[in-house]
Image (cartoon, rainbow, N blue to C red; front, top):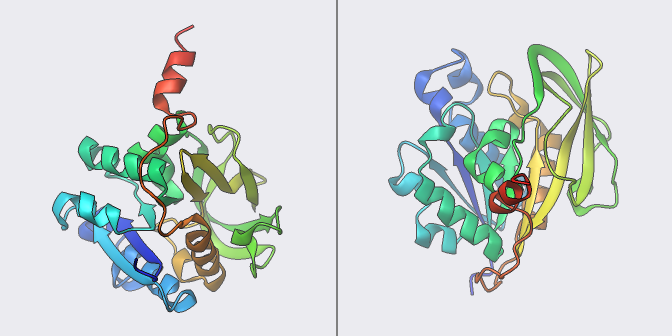
Length: 252
């Protein structure tokens, strides 16, 4: 068995490919995925960190053999959710239920995989005025919060606000507040089947949030928490709420 933590950083890469915003190449010369991977490597030097991009990797970089060799998958998506094939989503879904960790970032809340696993719309309110975000730790005992400042001060960021249409999380770890007065459940965990899921909202493509050392620490902590190396990947018969459960409940 591979003793190294195997982390896969997945990015749709659409903003970088379109050079939109125009400064993204300067801010993230190796792409958003490259910046996140670099942060993970700095905090987890013994981990095996690989990257994949939707349009440039075979099977979106999410082939069966790749997922079988992945302990935790990080997911960044925004404007290309519809371009992710249903077959790839089904593979990721099956591996999460079997015990692969999943970390969903920022606008990945609207990704096919996140909405399928949570069974709700995952909608929220938003405004992009480059406001300051304060990320407050509300569960300091959780491993993801270890060594993390409270608050994390992010000078400029897109505002995400409530109502965030998600099921009640297993853990509420971080709450964000914004200059406009809004608040948001910015760091939450879920369990689906055997898999551990962490959603963390800071990280819009307009701003250099993934270079922030405290954000990098949160993601490294999240990867360690979500990964369960060596776990048998067979999915259990009871997988916790998913889209099928949600739709059935709302037929009545």
